[in-house]
Length: 90
Image (cartoon, rainbow, N blue to C red):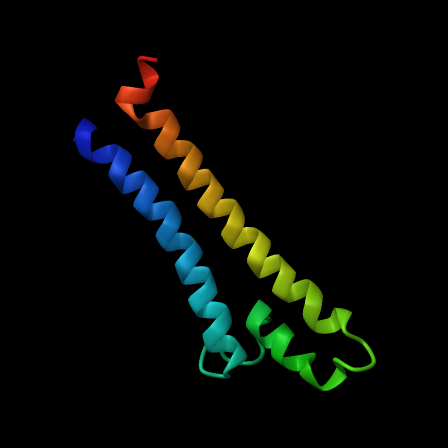
């Protein structure tokens, strides 16, 4: 178990970012969560009509998705470095 924990934690954080991106993509295409529930993908899709006049309606939800996914990927990278027994001895 201790040898597998490092890989499981890193894969969990990477897959979490992938799932967030997948959910946002499916919601953008109207194939995700039903409309009464707000999602970032629906917010980006709702702002497509206003891109010429109010670009921030789509920009900020899209940026939120990108920052959250980047944060989880950086967390996974940091955990990989922190939990690696070979790097701990240095």
